[in-house]
Amino acid sequence: MVQTFGALNNETTKFQFKLKLTTLTKRGMGKLHLVILVTFKDGIPPDQIDQLIKQYANLVNLIEPMKAFHWGENVSIENYHQGFTHVFESTFDSTEGVAEYIDHPAHVEYANTLIPQLEKFLAVDYKPEKLSP
Amino acid sequence: MVQTFGALNNETTKFQFKLKLTTLTKRGMGKLHLVILVTFKDGIPPDQIDQLIKQYANLVNLIEPMKAFHWGENVSIENYHQGFTHVFESTFDSTEGVAEYIDHPAHVEYANTLIPQLEKFLAVDYKPEKLSP
Image 1 (cartoon, rainbow over the protein chains, first blue to last red):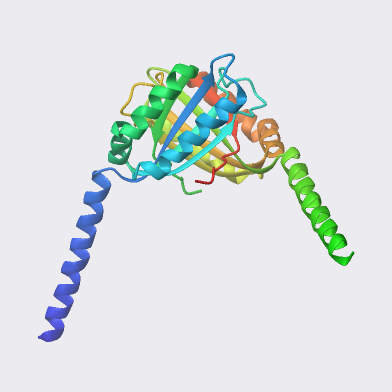
Image 2: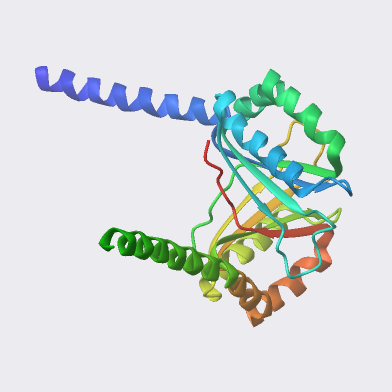
């Protein structure tokens, strides 16, 4: 009798665990990448660009749902970059995290500093998926 | 005198180390991301899009310098995506690796299949750098 109850409890636990995971997935959990492509306006000096990138990177320390920041200059040897010169890549745990980041005062202030210095700007969010071979 | 030599040797080591790092950077070592944004033409059925993504992912098995492939649909809640609907992200060890990939017959064949089905196409390469906080 004790063993039967034990097995039953075990199944209940598994079922609850599965339910919880499904709910989390539906609520938009899973790593999310925000990729931003920019071109700075002519005449913005390189040290000012460096400073803007450092300020962007520092948002990780100010905005909790922003988990990581990487950047790089476009080094494409093909000509499909449409003039974009810099890539900024931020990582979040969920779409809710991105929404929180967008509304965060530190992001709003930074965007108001960055955007007037840009010639071009493009932003996409995606959840990187890997296909099995 | 020993101390002076010690200090000198130390500086030489640092200098050599710096030189080596610079050489590695100039030779294009370090992880490189190729990010492609696309919009499929109207009327391309979803199962055909799935098939094209599977074929893209399969290039990892055919082209040695292509180390990883991830993809995702654009889920941006802002309106800066310029109509791009899919993100494809491939990883390489070097810019030479990307060049080898571009010229590889399997990539050329795939590009000739994919591109006629696209409305829009954008590609940037960058070496993701992390700034210390």
